[in-house]
Amino acid sequence: MFGLGWPEIAIIGLVAVVIFGPKKIPELGSALGKTLRGFKEELNKPSEDSDRSEEKQ
Image (tube, rainbow, N blue to C red):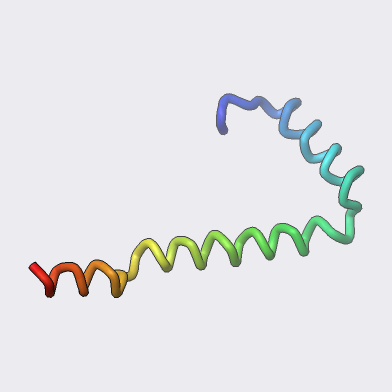
């Protein structure tokens, strides 16, 4: 995973818990998931701008 081994992932997780606290981590994960899901949906649906530019040609 990105060239990281298990010790590096464990250290990153520990630092995240120390910085954000154990109660905040699930909230951050949920927000990140919603953001990525929305971004993916926007990439998959055809945009209105591209439809308009095709009509002009």
